[in-house]
Length: 256
Image 1: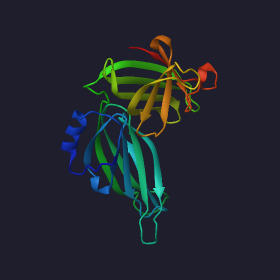
Image 2 (image 1 turned 135 degrees about the horizontal axis):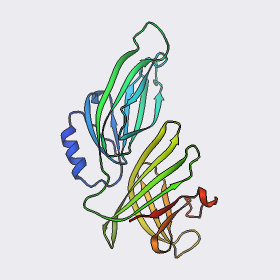
Image 3 (image 1 turned 90 degrees about the horizontal axis):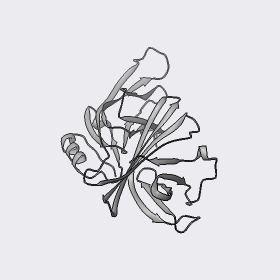
Image 4 (image 1 turned 120 degrees about the horizontal axis):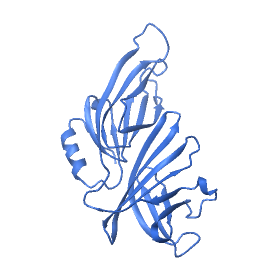
């Protein structure tokens, strides 16, 4: 789902804060949204697409105030489709934490020269609200630190919500991961979506499995519920045990 927000901040803020957070969404902004404000919910994605007319000399650069509720994900440069067209740059951010912040993009000179260093700026205010659904019941919270290929470890918190203690017809999860000691320091990322209680995996037809479906990744995650529900062990996409040493497996322990 894609939303424009120029001139609609107050109505959008009220809707985001009061409506059920359900699946995560992508909010897309353009140059017309400059100097506005937006309200997101944890797990949402913010995409900003701006024209980049003289890409060889100038490019848009991101400036995030710290601390920020947003985590920069990646940016894409799209060349013009014809000689009279204009190239664009798209920047994506994850609404990782509750809080207020701002995003500023500046169209900066890429090489030394007499031309101005910055010729244009784009700025928006951002509020990120909690992904916790107020009208639902918190079924369980799981935490753990797992191995990471290019950082010191991944701190994970998984919260599972349902319509009722014994009513699993509408389920929402919120998962926050903090990547520790990476090149850019600690980086957080949150995703949100629907979860389902399943019976049976690829090995045991009587196993209990949680299936997590996030709107952003497009890939389901599977967690095997260990006896008593004290821990979760992540399975692969075929719902099979991950073939790796225990220290490299994703194991989360229940904390409430």
